Length: 455
Ligand code: TYD
Ligand code: MG
Image (cartoon, rainbow, N blue to C red; front, side, top):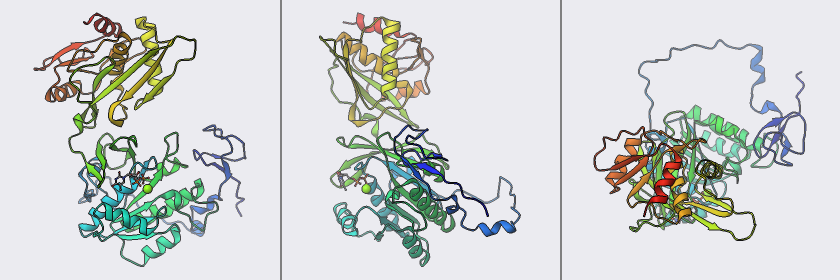
């Protein structure tokens, strides 16, 4: 008889300890360690151990095997997935509450159902009537979706076992599911992990596409278990500012495709609308340049998106600690850039409040945004607008050098197409581009001189 050891799992990050502690040694959260269900949950048939069977080895290039994909019915969703759902795969859809996950999945499920495929939508959060009301509002009430309001994984899988497997199974959300073979309340690590395991196994065996909705905690990880991210084939995140219209669908992990393509949607009264041409969305559209505003040609996969970066500097009279507030960019990166501007360029931000905002609720993750942010900051500090119709890109090092970034020429070309006339960036960019006045900036101090000297 194997002695089962006690295990304690952190409800915040999912890390496992063998003794109880007040603070999680991994993520530092307090009072999050809870005794985990014994590890036997996963290996359902221990008795197989008496006589294992031989495992067959196969070649890598099995002939005639192609990756089949099913369109989601939403081109932007397909794009973010790398071409549609892969049968038998499991997708985790993360995002802040209220961002539109349920709306997106109901719309996709309706498209799949209308195309004649069997589709099951299980809501553990809303009553069937609520989902029906939303479907009616979205104009999807006629879609032949099989809708259920349920939270017991045993009930759900038993029901699915009595019918042909659906093409698409949506579980909204995994945190509301519970399995009676596992101890703990719904939403705890062991429940989430156990329920996901059962559902994923069903998907693999039946060939159904499984989409699990997962809530995101305040620090941006999908609540509870990172383990869930390892269990699924695709991790997607649905992002945006709730107060803004635009939503970005991103793949953070994809076993069947690239992770750098995004899908862009706009939340309207009739649900999510696809935005096939997002390049101009995140610009303010104003003609007169103002101090503290720069335009960054971001690249999302193969798709360029021009984004306006806005900086505001407020000088403080008193000795109060100045605030630094950032929306849409990494605050650590801003602190670094401010330090580089102070140390290498002799600028003084220490007694000033710094506010940085990326327009339209966009979230910048491209490191090439450094130069555009630096330009906005210097322009705000000097109270001088940047040259009109200009774009800025380049990564800034701690030494104040402007480093080359991927696809400089592609970024410039898109900016030209949209009517921009000037580009500022690293020296490596091929300057053989017609229609643009490209000026290379090798060092950050040169940027500062240029802005300070401008009219
Ligand atoms: P929802 O899909 O419920 O978000 P999640 O499942 O991620 O929590 O979306 C809720 C928000 O979307 C809600 O605050 C209102 C907004 N919304 C619209 O603006 N238009 C619509 O047609 C719908 C259905 C929702
Ligand atoms: Mg929801």
